Image (tube, rainbow, N blue to C red; front, side, top):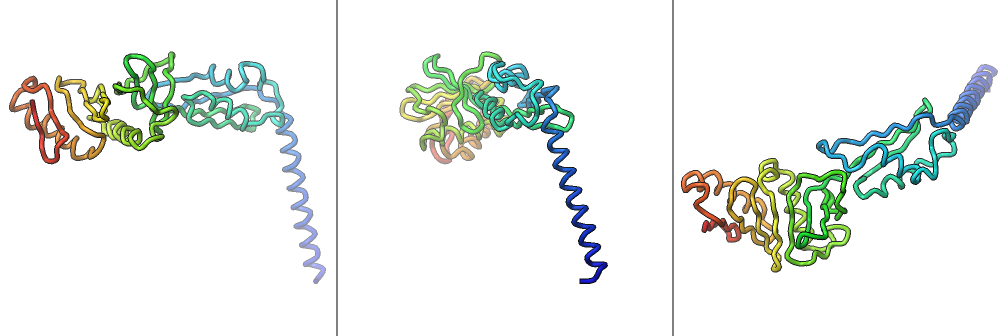
Amino acid sequence: MSKEEKKNIMIYSFSGLLLLSLMTFVGIKNNSRKIDVVTVEILDQDGIFFTDQLEVVDLMTDKSADYVIGVEMGDLEPKILEERVEANPFVKDAQVYRDLKGNLQVKVKQSKPIARLFVGGKNDRYIDSDGRVLPVNAKHTARVPLMETEFEFGWDKNLNESKYGTQVFELLQYIEQDEFWKAQIAHILIKKDGEIELYPQVTKQTIVFGMPEDFDSKFSKLMTFYKEILPKKGWNTYSRVNLKFENQIICE
């Protein structure tokens, strides 16, 4: 090995050692910095907020039993703080991290209710966009379809716990993802035999949907009923429209 090559190796080694030392120094310095500010950002879910900044901080600090303001960065464990915030059933995800200015940043993603479930006017629950069964929140009421069952619902934590529950959840998703049906369907009734009736927001007809299946076909027939039959026969001519049978629309 030539003298020039040895010289270059020494230079690179020294530079690497210097860089490592600087990184270690910066890391130690940052870990010793104290948290001055906590910034909470709740990601918008259609303008609905089931939690707020004060509640997030309260959860994160374990109801003020474990302060973060004034604590050195190195003494904080972001994962534990995230788990505390995620204990709120309406928090879908929480990200806690420290910035270089000595601030603690908290980003919260909320669950999104897509239906409100109740049995006989009690045991209210929300169903969110992941199928989770959530408690009713006193701070805010979501404007979502009301889903009523004629039997005690057997879903403890998620509609996807059963095959039928998954079918119902897919129906809720179908309605949620279509702007017209989302605005039009106000009430969903699950009867004792598992068949479903829908009650619209605008017109007065009971929509006999049958089992939660064949969504494209049934909603296509319902759209035909709205666009072609009601304008000709009159909006209040029929009290029921039956979509259960293949290739048929039965109006009563």
